[in-house]
Image 1 (cartoon, rainbow, N blue to C red):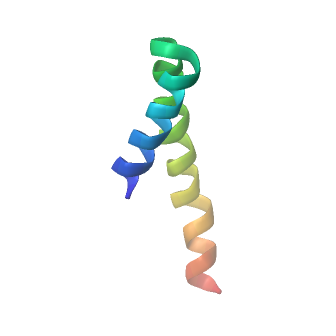
Image 2 (image 1 turned 180 degrees about the vertical axis):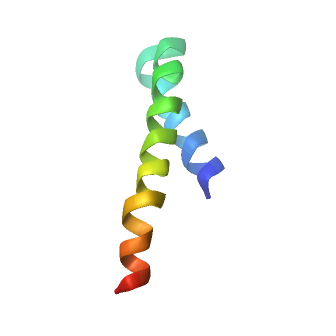
Length: 47
């Protein structure tokens, strides 16, 4: 799933801002996924 999310967000970054958008979108998406794995998923496991 993470590859799909990174790919989709990278594509949107390219469409909106060109190559610079891709260079910004991919690390931001990776950080968001990492944060979700650390914060959101443990909370869902406890619930």
